Length: 229
Ligand code: G3P
Image 1 (tube, rainbow, N blue to C red):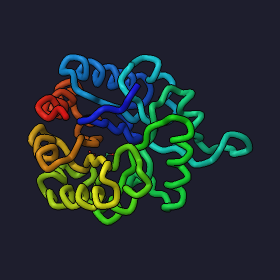
Image 2 (image 1 turned 90 degrees about the vertical axis):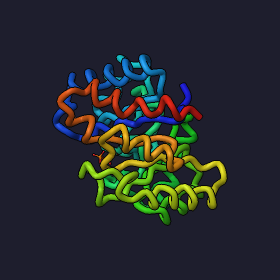
Image 3 (image 1 turned 135 degrees about the vertical axis):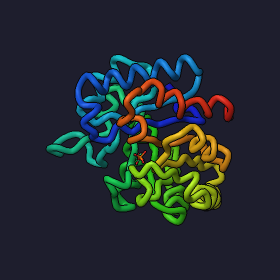
């Protein structure tokens, strides 16, 4: 399976709404919408649920974090081999809620690549996007931390952060691909993000905490239809 763009990435985080079978239910809904609309949707459930969820759906499943540690005497660490075995296509790295040092990001990327896994590396500002683009992850995700979980979309509140991030990323690596997240809640937020050049969106609370998951996933996925790349 390949990672295709434009894409909606649904980060489950560790919200109580997605524990156990509920996480599988949301995965199935994401798959249904992906098939109905023919758009790319990936999900990032907590690590303990990767295996169960990957067995039930055929959309891309990502870990929310992976360690650079190898297999062996590395008690408690999550290795790239393990998430692959659990059915993940890749992992988020350096999420704002799970920050890593640059050196760890580089080592983790090397481990993912060695295992044939994809990477979505998060960054807090355009400067960090530019710097991390040099490590050539598959996707970079710009997420201003102050907007995460607020319902105030980065694409509307800080559009310049997206355009500048794309500019900085391309300056470091012409092939760099940037998506964005933080506060994305409506169809218009996604449309705006895509019109600014973002190749997708990374969304959590507005979907996970929605009363009607299907309605919410569909609303945020629809704009991808008109931005096929
Ligand atoms: O990883 C996505 C995330 O940090 C954005 O969260 O709740 O603002 O969509 P949220």
